[in-house]
Image (cartoon, rainbow, N blue to C red):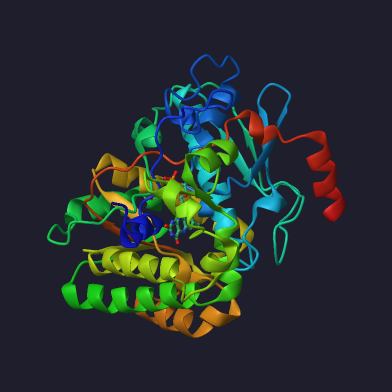
Length: 389
Ligand SMILES: Cc1cc2nc3c(=O)[nH]c(=O)nc-3n(C[C@H](O)[C@H](O)[C@H](O)COP(=O)(O)O)c2cc1C
């Protein structure tokens, strides 16, 4: 018999997708299989890889134009930001940087020497606007060697499964993550010593709990949750809450807006318990920082490029990785925990952009993607975007 407890545990489950059985809608995970196959324009081949980038809440905040034979300009889709939890668009900019890095790796794989120009019409402040976030020219064909990280793009995941507490990542593998990110000027540090890990678990958990008790944050996340296969197939974005018991839970209205926005609802209490187990079982944490002076839009974009590389290096080493961003977020209700966490992570003038747990876990299914054509938006959407600014 389906118990209430069983139904609710799916809330904390890793986003898990099964292949699409929908008759008329595209498979939401098709983008991960042989990306770029059959594309004749090298930029579309590169874009087919870029859309597999990690990005906050899987909003896929990317719009693109192609110019001439070798230009690609990336814009932020301003409707796909997270204004409550990410008021400066830091995380969204990081997701744009990850996109650019995967584009670059794929272009290099085809023998080009891509040239990235961040914010070619100037940086926007304090938030992103309709100006381009980056321009990438394919550049000349070169004999430069390809980047081994390219091979891991389609296998990379954010892994929210439980981690094996007894297996601490090898130092050499953690150094591999740091080396990959350092190529973009970012520093990766880590904590594996039990006392420091325990202290970080405590702080990261306080931040998660605070977020779960902050109505604006809960409402924002709720808007990006996709309950069940049908919603995943329809949207092909957001955070999938999938599993065989979703149907009954939907039937019982457990995922009603009122329930999900109430921190004390049975659904959210159960979810908190499940997430607590995940944090308690984290064997190690790693964080990616840039120089404090680099906390500019360009610095955040660069941090995103570095994060993509770190995530790919983890995949290459067989390591699972999962960001816990709550404590780094810049909304008022998080301010005290954010200060404490920054002190706990502090290293000189470094400014932390990403904080992840890292370890060994069972694999997860890929997250949905909307596909390359969605990057071109539509004329109406673009007009609205420029009107807003
Ligand atoms: C800037 C940034 C912040 C993120 N923060 C979190 C987080 O706090 N919790 C989480 O579970 N995943 C987080 N993620 C992971 C994204 O949710 C994930 O990349 C997205 O859902 C797509 O899934 P994929 O990485 O498996 O392709 C973050 C990713 C980025 C780039």
